[in-house]
Length: 362
Ligand code: PLP
Image (cartoon, rainbow, N blue to C red; front, side, top):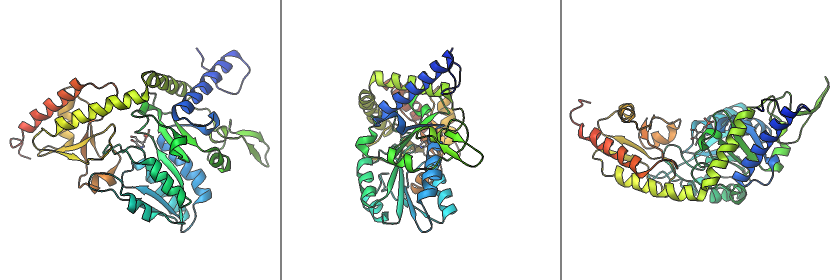
């Protein structure tokens, strides 16, 4: 009913479409407690947001001999764009290690920070182990060394309240589908001082104020980073998803899931032959495990037959799984729609699989 491009026409459909698109931006702003709508840039998702910062901020601010710091916990999307930037400009990518629980070793992290560190990029919540990182402390340490910070919020936004101003992150990124919205849309929050100083990363319509053959004058943020027609309906859909979780309350969701995760951990510890991978001090969303004598993929298929959906594989986070000596794990992840009965069904199914050990000839 409101299918029209935004910002471009005087007709009623265009006005309604623009209003819906910009109202969704305001919902993202409120969701992250960002200071203004202009600090919220629409992107395809977390991956694109990180690539935007690596290409735009990175090419301008990271040079030969500089350093970019990530952690051992990162999703590939928070490693590869930085690796590409570093190889292009002659900088070095360094990774802060984790301890045997899967928590970032803060003293080792701090040792990596030095005047050559230009930016630190790390996850708020690990998608492989569920580790919640001490974002505020890590941001503070990076800032003390003059580095900027990008926080990958993909796994945090559906599990806990996020306040980018309290965290003092320079950039915070997430994907719509991680918070029950559509795929192919997400948001980049950036401090206005950073966004203003950054060059556009893609050129085209919507991001310009004036074009001649000799030069173009760009819009201010966020339009400067939104070349071409965006995924308007999906942005509005993400706004609806945010309304949905906010109606329940992110603090209520966090408290509910905390109880559910502890219940699941208790249950998993009763399964003979099951080894939990990582035991972080603070956890959200995900639990990784392996089961003796069972291939990870076979566990995934067997659980699927019982109507239980888990991830089985490397979770796009090979470095952290290898840190624990695995190539792949089984990873149930819990969200607000899961119940203790779901957990009971998972544990009962795993007990049945565990009982088959010794008969499988693996
Ligand atoms: N970062 C983390 C921690 C993730 O869990 C994911 C997706 O699983 C991503 C980044 C990449 O998100 P997307 O594929 O939506 O860009």
